[in-house]
Length: 265
Image 1 (cartoon, rainbow, N blue to C red):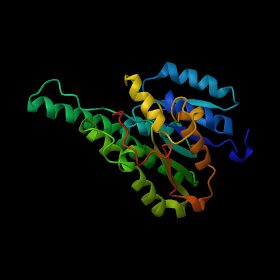
Image 2 (tube, rainbow, N blue to C red; image 1 turned 180 degrees about the horizontal axis):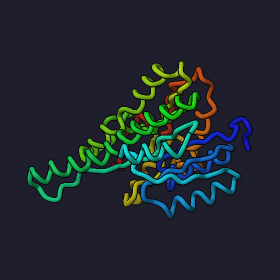
Image 3 (cartoon, rainbow, N blue to C red; image 1 turned 90 degrees about the vertical axis):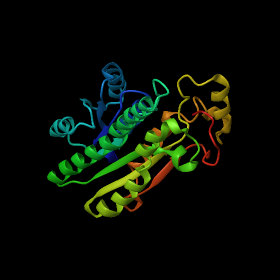
């Protein structure tokens, strides 16, 4: 256990499964206590909680819709984090039911609302609530936003059915930098992690998955699967230990694939 953390509490949003679970487990090993947030994946949250407790961490489950101001207010009446990892996200695509203009516009509206709620509104409300709580308790904190390297690395990575998703995640490096400039003197530090091809997309053809893995500029032993959620968790572990002068750091975790046009989407 790493005693330098002094058993600080970290809020990991969307921490029940996939990358979120990897983050929870890595930080538990580092000696942090975790507020493990989930919206509906309670079974997975309980499983991750049990695993993390095996490392001696205290794990407090937090349920709620982070795009709902009432849920966020309720949550922050119960918790007092020292750091926030904005992992919860949606990847909604616009899939019209038919070919009419009404169908097309409805699909875009649904995708926009889903992506903006999870990827933009949630992190905004949670950041504001966390800073408010920290100020009340006269302490600082660290905030880590998770973005998408494929958006900033090469603009043709996603098709037009992902426009709403792209819009909902594009802000990440800019907000991280801006808030670092504005708030770091108060002891609030901001970083961003831009993920690349972490896990194979559900339903992708086998040949596509193989091609994407081959494009990663890392040894084959580290492509299991691809870069993996553990790689992101390691970077977040590092960022939480960065000195104050490193505020505003943006890490890209994409296997040096930023100049390659990925075919997966």
